[in-house]
Length: 277
Image (cartoon, rainbow, N blue to C red; front, side, top):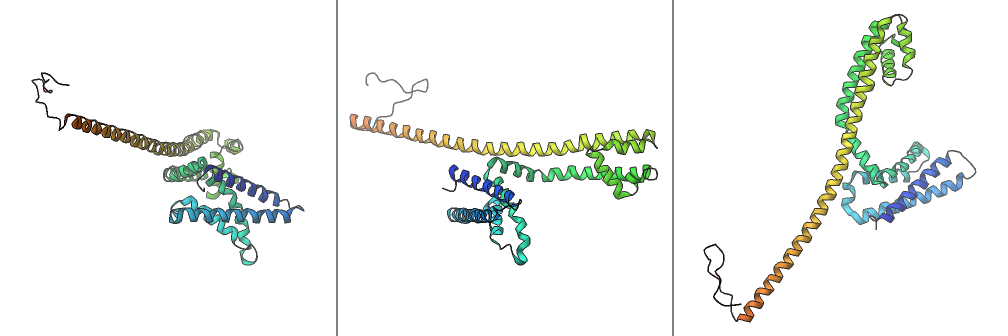
């Protein structure tokens, strides 16, 4: 039951209702007491769901990291939100994230993102090196004339980040170009290197990881289908073998004894008898 489509759809609807309740409660309207009752009902449904899944899967339930996430979210929901645990009330919003576990396509995306972390870490590390080096160069070149953007290393690094996002970068470049007319070369090279090359590398790593994850899931499905087809073919061959054995027994019973082996002819085949069947 817990693996059926209707059960997953029902839980998805409950998660969405919970999201609406949490959003509605932020308005603090007169319906707040009723929303609290509805929230307790939703938590009760989540507890029943976890109980059914643990009972159905036993120890296999905790082999899936997504089940750990669901279990943690439901456990946090049961902690009292008063007294020293009042801060945990903020964690109620995590119940909305359960929509990720309820939709398989979302799980594939999140899994692909986690698998892309090593590759992204390398590219992001290289990006940080470029930003840090450019920040030091910019501070030494433009720090005295434009201190509001490059007065120290911290300010310079923040300006480099803004330039990478191409957010209001003309304001920075215009202020520098008034004192350094050739500074456009620095800004053009930096923006092209970071915004158009390095960030696209990060996106490329993520897209590659997602493609691999999707292909892996399809490969698993193909393997399962091939296994089913293989079992069907082997069952058919077994059935044909049994039919051949039955025909041989019928021939033996009709002839009153075992079928004599025919001598091989010149061509390697059985020699044709002079007369027979």
